[in-house]
Amino acid sequence: MGQPRSFISLLTGCFAMPAAENPTVVMIEAAYRNHGLDARYRTCEVAPAAARRRGGENTDGQGFLTALRTVIDPAGRRVVLFGAGGAARSIVTPGRVMIGSR
Image (cartoon, rainbow, N blue to C red; front, side, top):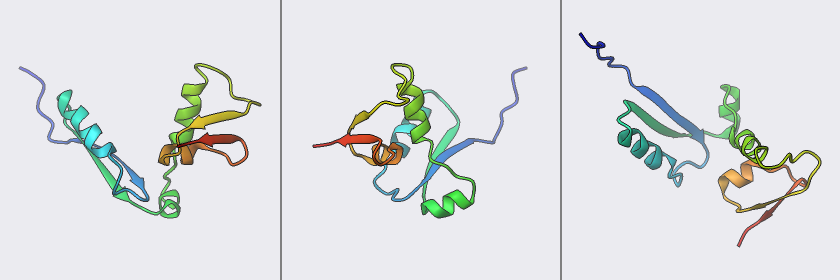
């Protein structure tokens, strides 16, 4: 006999401000369907201060540094980041990263 079916879905998502123009929910939900995963992604518009009080944190910066370190160690270096979207703005430290955008 096979594994019993679970009626509990995986729930993932993010708390963001602003959230209305964030296309992540569409992309992640499509990926879940494509891979046959019983999971949902939700985006909730929450002010940053409220999210921090509830233990939320921005992971964009850490993800960027982890990926960058596979190519070069940025310690003590000046970095130019091309693009100035939401993720770019969330990972920069003023005076330490130069943002180039059109």
